[in-house]
Image 1: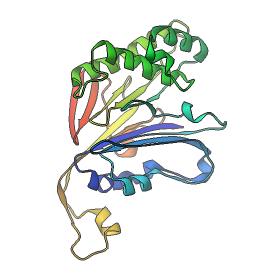
Image 2: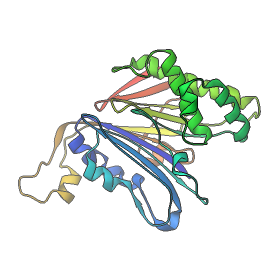
Image 3: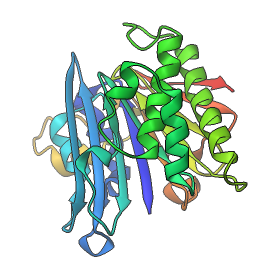
Image 4: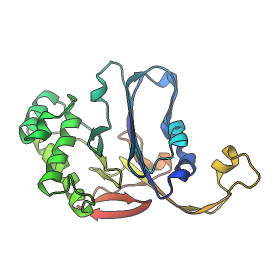
Length: 276
């Protein structure tokens, strides 16, 4: 089982409040593992927390980290694993302030990796710390960003980044299609700490939840804020939660499906769509 979870919030101090109903998505029991996991969090102005663990045998609770860190954006990747791997092979992957995670992979990794490496030139090729197909897909995405002058831009063009994400998937699939005929459902998520984007190649493999204010009494405040003058509502809060899961339909997680012909953008808790 593999799952990608990402989110963006308009008020970092209240991120845990918005995600509280979905906290179990960030948790795993010991008997369900062992687990390999990675977590990248950002908060203003430029603080970054990046943790990766190749194998964990005990319980896992990434929501607790979100509670204490108050992130504006986050990207987590969790999967069940039976073998140890280097920390550099654990998603999410990082290049400067860009983070990336992906579900899906070809059946002939070695050959597809060779083709991907031949498409990545210059410094982007020689600075790949890991050895996975998914990280090479990330660097292919960086190539598209660099070609469109978005890689180092202070305020990247959202439409150009969305196009780069889709072109990354299509080029990778073209590589893989030459050695296998079957369709590979995939979820790609990227963030630069100022916004996040998600693309799903198929319906029912990714879902989202847009929290537009907590107008009823806040369950998180009820359970965790032990004072008489605690806030009961947060009408100004906006948060977007995105979950990619190839085995579980979004409706089973209480989420709305992400359409395959749209790229989801979250910035400051606001939601926007780009057609592909």
